[in-house]
Length: 582
Image (tube, rainbow, N blue to C red; front, side):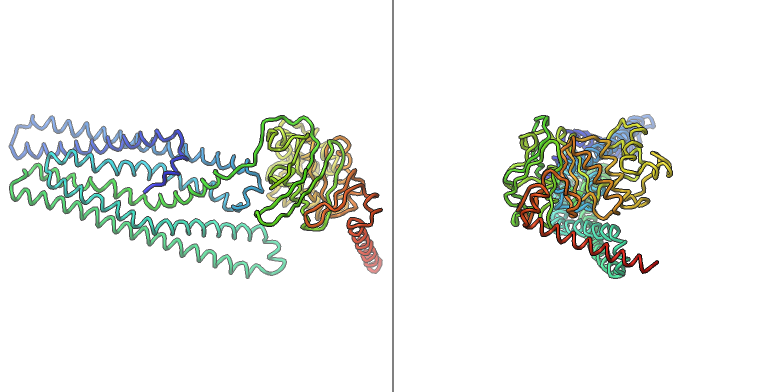
């Protein structure tokens, strides 16, 4: 009927459940008092008592009505407070968990899935905790309390009513076995459709270029149709369960009323007692009937809750408490696997001094970006250690390490906000003068100044600036951050030659006082590196300066010569085209 594991998500807010249930019980008792007052008035009417005799039952009815109103309002307030508090805390915990896990550690759940769980999932849990959970405990207690009252009025009818009450939970349990499977599929299909939609939006340009948008539309329609079908199954299940519970509830109440009326005819109960049972009979079933109505909310909330629990229980990368004082990095005999079966990094050892530029190169898929993830702490090795200042990452403080670390990649994110706001994320107290100095270093100051200065708004996904300008602006933001360790993961990928030259010039300047690690597919950019690691198939094959590696005539030299020949050929072809156009 309810998931005990989900109670862990409430924490100390369980007291609101207790308060809400107690107030709901008080409201029910007030309703019994109202019914008793009405029955007393009917008795006085049959006895033809004087008008003054009606004052007491009238006062009881009025006071009970006031108590019932106040209890209902307070119960609703506590349930609302429970839902809002739990929802806020869950969103905060989910967000912090995602931050703690790191991007590589949440790869089992897509970005669309994470968004749906943290938003829609917590909304469903709000309804589960605020509506279903208090109603569940109230529905279990209310029939027993009513039986304890009614048994003194007509024990035969009370036994029949109490005996019929369990039929509603039994019908709910019967439906729940089917409903769990339905709601698990519902959430899976919901997340899948969100993934497909987000994926299509992000790849809209490519879909248009390759004229594949019509084919993708068909796939989206199929996904939407599958979601529609599972939604219809959910609705059918809800309507069927409602019909069953209505039959049980009103049938049970009718059975109790029938027994009471038979008792009236046979003389074992009085007319007033029979009236009381008739008026109160439905109260035996209404709490469970309301529980059944909230059942689909509970199943949906439970499905979302289990996904949130699975996320919150994910093992976080281990961090310690030691402060980082020395920023030299190292990988010592590191092996890493994403899926636990295939090692993408095998027994790799690398050293990155506190000052200087170290490059990691190799063909696509050799493991370069995985090294960045390991150095950034978002991935942890299967064996071996990643160290900073001689201490393993699991020994140092996460905040201390990240306070000294910056990762600049080809897809560094710029927020849909002003230039100033983007800089203030890296350095909250940064001045406009310092912003313009950083922009001057990356040759963007004139462009930004002409377009509104620091108040210029960057569009979503930096859509109002070029790719080269985006990456130069991201670099300027990191320059203002003034970190001790900079990891450049293909930071010059897919940009113009001018932007590439500016970025590399800044990287070389930074390497004079910072620990700089550069990953680049273009070897011309790393010629001046203090040390170059050449990788093949997840292992380091060669390392040394550019001159040393070229003298060995190994894999690095072959790759460099191939690139050089290709670039020379491209320049010659481009020059020929320009001459012909003249």
